[in-house]
Image 1 (cartoon, helix red, strand yellow):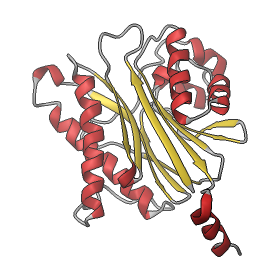
Image 2: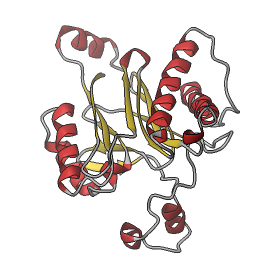
Image 3: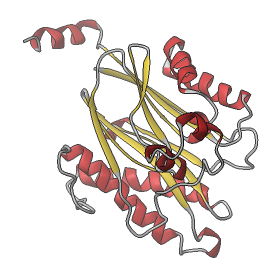
Length: 267
Protein backbone atom coordinates (compact mmCIF):
# COMPACT_ATOMS: atom_id res chain seq x y z
CA UNK A 1 0.00 0.00 0.00
CA UNK A 2 1.34 3.41 -0.96
CA UNK A 3 0.38 6.38 1.23
CA UNK A 4 0.38 10.04 0.27
CA UNK A 5 -0.15 12.50 3.11
CA UNK A 6 -0.55 16.24 3.53
CA UNK A 7 -1.49 18.46 6.45
CA UNK A 8 -2.53 22.08 6.84
CA UNK A 9 -3.41 24.27 9.80
CA UNK A 10 -4.92 27.76 9.54
CA UNK A 11 -5.82 30.43 12.09
CA UNK A 12 -9.25 31.02 10.53
CA UNK A 13 -11.05 34.34 10.29
CA UNK A 14 -11.80 35.18 13.93
CA UNK A 15 -9.23 33.86 16.41
CA UNK A 16 -6.15 36.05 17.11
CA UNK A 17 -3.74 33.09 17.08
CA UNK A 18 -3.68 29.42 16.17
CA UNK A 19 -4.08 26.96 19.06
CA UNK A 20 -4.22 23.93 16.74
CA UNK A 21 -1.23 21.76 15.91
CA UNK A 22 -0.64 18.99 13.40
CA UNK A 23 1.93 16.21 13.17
CA UNK A 24 3.03 14.17 10.16
CA UNK A 25 5.86 11.79 11.05
CA UNK A 26 6.13 9.10 8.34
CA UNK A 27 9.21 7.55 9.98
CA UNK A 28 6.96 6.57 12.91
CA UNK A 29 3.88 6.00 10.70
CA UNK A 30 2.28 8.66 12.93
CA UNK A 31 -0.21 11.40 12.04
CA UNK A 32 -2.14 13.60 14.47
CA UNK A 33 -4.21 16.73 15.03
CA UNK A 34 -4.60 18.57 18.35
CA UNK A 35 -6.86 21.51 19.24
CA UNK A 36 -5.69 23.39 22.33
CA UNK A 37 -7.65 25.50 24.77
CA UNK A 38 -7.26 27.60 27.90
CA UNK A 39 -5.21 30.48 29.31
CA UNK A 40 -3.14 33.18 27.59
CA UNK A 41 -1.88 31.19 24.61
CA UNK A 42 -2.15 28.14 26.89
CA UNK A 43 -4.00 26.19 24.23
CA UNK A 44 -1.21 26.80 21.76
CA UNK A 45 1.30 25.29 24.18
CA UNK A 46 -1.01 22.44 25.20
CA UNK A 47 -1.51 21.20 21.65
CA UNK A 48 2.19 21.48 20.82
CA UNK A 49 3.30 19.76 24.04
CA UNK A 50 0.81 16.97 23.36
CA UNK A 51 2.04 16.24 19.84
CA UNK A 52 5.74 16.65 20.70
CA UNK A 53 5.29 14.20 23.58
CA UNK A 54 3.50 11.71 21.33
CA UNK A 55 6.41 11.81 18.92
CA UNK A 56 9.05 11.53 21.66
CA UNK A 57 7.27 8.63 23.36
CA UNK A 58 6.90 6.63 20.15
CA UNK A 59 10.54 7.26 19.23
CA UNK A 60 11.53 5.82 22.62
CA UNK A 61 9.10 2.92 22.13
CA UNK A 62 10.75 2.08 18.81
CA UNK A 63 14.00 1.62 20.78
CA UNK A 64 12.28 -0.39 23.51
CA UNK A 65 12.56 2.34 26.14
CA UNK A 66 8.91 3.40 26.67
CA UNK A 67 6.94 1.60 29.40
CA UNK A 68 3.18 1.22 28.95
CA UNK A 69 1.25 4.03 30.64
CA UNK A 70 -2.05 2.83 32.07
CA UNK A 71 -3.65 -0.52 31.31
CA UNK A 72 -3.88 -2.19 27.93
CA UNK A 73 -7.38 -2.28 26.44
CA UNK A 74 -8.56 -5.81 25.75
CA UNK A 75 -9.50 -6.58 22.17
CA UNK A 76 -7.04 -4.11 20.66
CA UNK A 77 -3.68 -4.72 19.03
CA UNK A 78 -0.30 -3.97 20.58
CA UNK A 79 0.06 -1.00 18.23
CA UNK A 80 -3.29 0.50 19.21
CA UNK A 81 -2.48 0.07 22.89
CA UNK A 82 0.94 1.63 22.35
CA UNK A 83 -0.73 4.66 20.78
CA UNK A 84 -3.20 4.84 23.68
CA UNK A 85 -0.27 4.71 26.08
CA UNK A 86 1.40 7.55 24.18
CA UNK A 87 -1.72 9.71 24.55
CA UNK A 88 -1.91 8.97 28.27
CA UNK A 89 1.77 9.94 28.58
CA UNK A 90 1.06 13.16 26.69
CA UNK A 91 -1.82 13.82 29.08
CA UNK A 92 0.61 13.70 32.00
CA UNK A 93 2.97 16.08 30.21
CA UNK A 94 0.25 18.66 29.53
CA UNK A 95 -1.21 18.29 33.04
CA UNK A 96 2.18 18.91 34.65
CA UNK A 97 3.03 21.78 32.29
CA UNK A 98 -0.24 23.51 33.24
CA UNK A 99 1.23 24.16 36.69
CA UNK A 100 4.46 25.67 35.36
CA UNK A 101 2.93 29.11 34.76
CA UNK A 102 -0.17 30.72 36.29
CA UNK A 103 -1.47 31.74 32.86
CA UNK A 104 -1.39 28.08 31.75
CA UNK A 105 -3.66 26.83 34.54
CA UNK A 106 -6.60 24.95 33.11
CA UNK A 107 -5.08 24.51 29.66
CA UNK A 108 -5.80 21.32 27.75
CA UNK A 109 -6.17 19.95 24.26
CA UNK A 110 -8.04 17.49 22.14
CA UNK A 111 -6.06 14.95 20.15
CA UNK A 112 -6.78 12.46 17.39
CA UNK A 113 -3.78 10.35 16.40
CA UNK A 114 -3.24 7.56 13.92
CA UNK A 115 -0.53 4.95 13.28
CA UNK A 116 -0.60 3.25 9.87
CA UNK A 117 1.54 0.15 9.38
CA UNK A 118 0.95 -1.61 6.06
CA UNK A 119 -2.83 -1.81 5.77
CA UNK A 120 -3.44 -1.70 9.53
CA UNK A 121 -4.72 1.56 11.01
CA UNK A 122 -4.75 2.29 14.76
CA UNK A 123 -6.54 5.37 16.10
CA UNK A 124 -6.53 6.99 19.54
CA UNK A 125 -8.49 10.09 20.45
CA UNK A 126 -9.66 12.36 23.24
CA UNK A 127 -12.04 15.29 22.74
CA UNK A 128 -13.91 16.39 19.62
CA UNK A 129 -11.20 16.39 16.96
CA UNK A 130 -12.22 13.70 14.52
CA UNK A 131 -11.03 10.90 12.27
CA UNK A 132 -12.99 10.09 9.12
CA UNK A 133 -12.78 7.32 6.53
CA UNK A 134 -13.81 8.05 2.94
CA UNK A 135 -14.38 4.76 1.11
CA UNK A 136 -16.30 4.37 -2.14
CA UNK A 137 -17.52 7.96 -1.93
CA UNK A 138 -19.08 7.40 1.52
CA UNK A 139 -17.69 9.34 4.49
CA UNK A 140 -17.79 7.63 7.89
CA UNK A 141 -16.80 9.20 11.20
CA UNK A 142 -14.44 6.83 13.01
CA UNK A 143 -14.33 8.67 16.33
CA UNK A 144 -17.04 9.70 18.77
CA UNK A 145 -16.92 13.27 20.09
CA UNK A 146 -16.28 13.65 23.81
CA UNK A 147 -18.56 16.64 24.21
CA UNK A 148 -21.60 17.61 26.25
CA UNK A 149 -23.71 17.90 23.09
CA UNK A 150 -22.75 14.44 21.84
CA UNK A 151 -23.63 12.95 25.22
CA UNK A 152 -27.06 14.54 24.99
CA UNK A 153 -27.58 13.03 21.53
CA UNK A 154 -26.42 9.57 22.60
CA UNK A 155 -28.71 9.71 25.62
CA UNK A 156 -31.68 10.53 23.37
CA UNK A 157 -32.18 13.95 24.95
CA UNK A 158 -31.44 15.83 21.74
CA UNK A 159 -31.71 15.01 18.05
CA UNK A 160 -28.76 15.24 15.70
CA UNK A 161 -30.41 18.18 13.90
CA UNK A 162 -31.01 20.00 17.19
CA UNK A 163 -27.36 19.47 18.11
CA UNK A 164 -26.21 21.40 15.04
CA UNK A 165 -27.63 24.65 16.45
CA UNK A 166 -27.49 24.00 20.20
CA UNK A 167 -25.49 26.15 22.59
CA UNK A 168 -22.58 24.48 24.36
CA UNK A 169 -21.25 22.73 21.27
CA UNK A 170 -17.68 23.45 22.36
CA UNK A 171 -18.07 22.13 25.92
CA UNK A 172 -15.89 19.01 26.16
CA UNK A 173 -16.54 16.12 28.51
CA UNK A 174 -12.97 14.84 28.10
CA UNK A 175 -9.66 16.53 27.18
CA UNK A 176 -5.93 15.91 27.39
CA UNK A 177 -4.32 17.67 30.37
CA UNK A 178 -7.45 18.62 32.32
CA UNK A 179 -7.05 15.75 34.80
CA UNK A 180 -4.10 13.72 36.00
CA UNK A 181 -5.36 10.71 34.04
CA UNK A 182 -7.54 10.48 30.94
CA UNK A 183 -9.67 7.82 29.26
CA UNK A 184 -8.49 7.28 25.68
CA UNK A 185 -10.75 5.79 22.99
CA UNK A 186 -9.15 3.33 20.57
CA UNK A 187 -10.26 2.15 17.15
CA UNK A 188 -8.76 0.01 14.40
CA UNK A 189 -9.49 -0.77 10.77
CA UNK A 190 -7.99 -2.38 7.69
CA UNK A 191 -7.04 0.01 4.91
CA UNK A 192 -8.11 -0.64 1.32
CA UNK A 193 -6.75 0.86 -1.92
CA UNK A 194 -8.62 4.07 -2.72
CA UNK A 195 -9.35 4.88 0.93
CA UNK A 196 -8.93 8.40 2.25
CA UNK A 197 -8.29 9.03 5.95
CA UNK A 198 -8.97 12.49 7.34
CA UNK A 199 -8.00 13.91 10.72
CA UNK A 200 -9.41 17.33 11.59
CA UNK A 201 -10.17 19.79 14.35
CA UNK A 202 -13.70 21.07 14.90
CA UNK A 203 -12.74 24.21 13.00
CA UNK A 204 -13.49 22.08 9.94
CA UNK A 205 -16.22 19.72 11.15
CA UNK A 206 -18.10 22.55 12.86
CA UNK A 207 -18.21 24.64 9.68
CA UNK A 208 -18.43 22.12 6.83
CA UNK A 209 -21.03 19.34 6.66
CA UNK A 210 -19.90 15.74 6.28
CA UNK A 211 -21.47 15.54 2.83
CA UNK A 212 -19.41 18.52 1.68
CA UNK A 213 -16.24 17.11 3.21
CA UNK A 214 -16.86 13.88 1.27
CA UNK A 215 -17.49 15.72 -1.99
CA UNK A 216 -14.45 17.99 -1.74
CA UNK A 217 -12.16 15.14 -0.71
CA UNK A 218 -13.44 12.83 -3.47
CA UNK A 219 -12.86 15.19 -6.39
CA UNK A 220 -9.55 16.74 -5.28
CA UNK A 221 -6.53 15.78 -7.37
CA UNK A 222 -4.30 15.15 -4.35
CA UNK A 223 -4.31 15.25 -0.54
CA UNK A 224 -2.71 18.70 -0.72
CA UNK A 225 -5.42 20.00 -3.03
CA UNK A 226 -8.12 18.49 -0.81
CA UNK A 227 -6.67 20.04 2.36
CA UNK A 228 -6.51 23.47 0.76
CA UNK A 229 -10.09 23.17 -0.52
CA UNK A 230 -11.37 22.07 2.89
CA UNK A 231 -9.64 24.92 4.73
CA UNK A 232 -10.84 27.44 2.13
CA UNK A 233 -14.41 26.15 2.50
CA UNK A 234 -14.33 26.49 6.31
CA UNK A 235 -12.90 29.99 6.00
CA UNK A 236 -15.54 30.84 3.42
CA UNK A 237 -18.22 29.94 5.96
CA UNK A 238 -16.77 32.38 8.46
CA UNK A 239 -13.75 30.51 9.84
CA UNK A 240 -14.94 30.95 13.43
CA UNK A 241 -12.22 28.65 14.78
CA UNK A 242 -8.74 27.48 13.90
CA UNK A 243 -8.86 24.89 11.12
CA UNK A 244 -6.59 21.86 10.91
CA UNK A 245 -6.67 18.93 8.50
CA UNK A 246 -4.43 15.95 7.77
CA UNK A 247 -5.39 13.78 4.80
CA UNK A 248 -3.91 10.45 3.75
CA UNK A 249 -4.62 8.68 0.47
CA UNK A 250 -4.02 4.93 0.12
CA UNK A 251 -3.25 3.58 -3.33
CA UNK A 252 -1.99 0.32 -4.77
CA UNK A 253 1.76 0.50 -5.27
CA UNK A 254 2.68 1.04 -8.90
CA UNK A 255 5.63 0.03 -11.02
CA UNK A 256 7.85 -3.06 -10.95
CA UNK A 257 8.12 -3.26 -7.15
CA UNK A 258 4.36 -3.01 -6.68
CA UNK A 259 3.78 -5.64 -9.37
CA UNK A 260 6.23 -8.05 -7.74
CA UNK A 261 4.60 -7.56 -4.33
CA UNK A 262 1.15 -8.31 -5.77
CA UNK A 263 2.52 -11.39 -7.58
CA UNK A 264 4.09 -12.88 -4.47
CA UNK A 265 1.18 -12.08 -2.12
CA UNK A 266 -1.59 -13.69 -4.16
CA UNK A 267 -3.42 -16.48 -2.38
